[in-house]
Length: 508
Image (cartoon, rainbow, N blue to C red; front, side, top):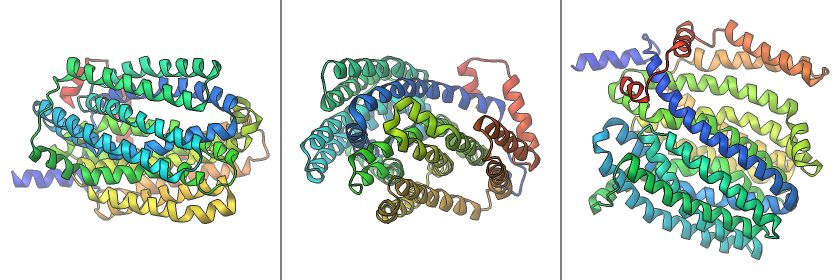
């Protein structure tokens, strides 16, 4: 038995023959990712329309304050979650029979830490802000934190049970309601505070509905737990929560920091809009990681190497697809943002075009953090995220003073890049990561595309952009960034006849 396990581990390493993801495993991840992306896609569409109206109606100053308040309370969300999403997916993914106990215990624990997080958010807002309007906005958003945290808990139960269709249902119902009520409030004479009140109320309603849906459709909720159970969740969740809070700071922290460093209120709105574009796009790798986590947990338990294969594939996808998004962003982003949001947001267009490149470090860092979480190593991702967060925070004052919103973006890149690079180097040191296929070859393909972009900069965007993307695609194939067996596996998945979700999940 020991020998079999040893050989299985060796198969997962880069020196042996990798255990490729099966078509059934890919299908499981794809189906659940599809539900997550569809739900988030709908959310992003309606919120994008909402953002256009809010930006034009409120102007850069108040719109910046709205997004600052949003980023403020989202900084506290990981503390409210306390790593429960990882605990749920890991425990349920390994043993569904234990699900009822884990679901009840995590909800009981989540209610307690959520109330603490909301209180901390509100008190910190009162201390840090002297402006009465900013204080009010932060207090309302702190109340929204309770509803959003408990709603997110139900989403995490859906993900753990690989039933993300219920997440899609919730988003289909509540996000359009929020936008419609927000617009009615705005055009009825309501101001910034009234819009934030609508936001808070809808999240509370969604939280109640989500818990009811879990109870009726997934597993009966029983709020039972001893102090020993609570301490176990706290001990498991503390390093996860620390890591997720620091990862979240890499996303939300730039806007919060910029608020307290920039002397121009309008400039905050410009930078906040650019970061919002990045946040919308980065949900794709987050959705894939969330949907794949139960599958990764089972792969780790089986030690079949599929966790390594998935992570390596995601790193390559982050480099290549992130570059595609980045090339599109710098080519058409400035003009597109100005057309949609108006000439007052022209600066945001240039910053947003560059912000899209953050998808590369974010995808790599998020994927490798989840790999370590699935293996039960919760401390290492937290340390790496802490180093990245420190790089962001320490570099921001100098870079913002020197370069304004572009400096804030550079500081964000420094933080995210440090985080992702450290994780990649640590993983490579284990001998499991094939640096040639995962990093070197994709980076070489991206460099070829960037050279083509520089050579075609005098051409119109409708000529240069397609040419550069074709160059990137060709370089990816010619340099061997995609393995032959992976192309075969992908073709099998594409040609696979659709089956039931239950059969797919069972086989994976």
